[in-house]
Amino acid sequence: MEVTGRIKVINPTQEVSASFKKRELVVTTDEQYPQHIMIEFTQAKVDDLNNFQVGEQVKVSINLRGREWTNPQGETKYFNSIQGWRIERLQQAAPAGQDMPAMPAAQAFEPAPSFNEEEHDDLPF
Image (cartoon, rainbow, N blue to C red; front, side, top):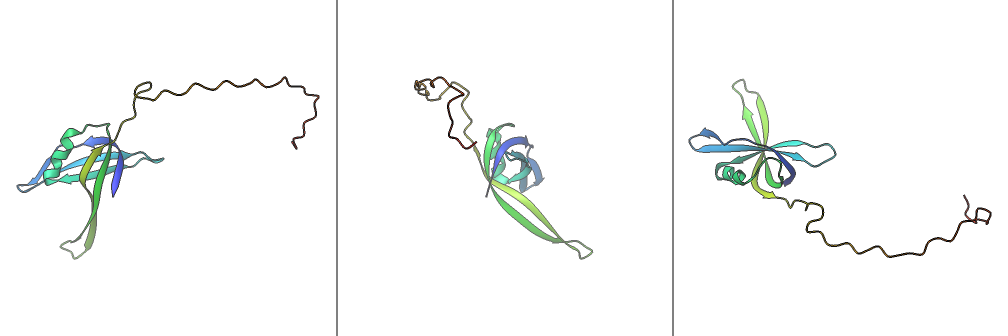
């Protein structure tokens, strides 16, 4: 699965334990109703975010993860997370006038003949 959009937040790396680290990224989607999607990168993948900045357009490859947990009272709870495993910068649109192919000149056309309202028009409206 993939999420595309603009980077809104890149959080610092969190050392959860001596053997586990994570880093969170928030991507705002480019939809009619934009969504702010928080994506976790873990372990060696946290360093993948070092080359990106807030505001960049990206495509993030993700996996959805689900966990089941039973609390001490015997209640079962379910948790979801979105785990990123690759991030790619999307091609930015070129500024106006740069790297754009030249448009062909508009072809000249014959002006319409003079209009006479008294002439019968066979259009039905």
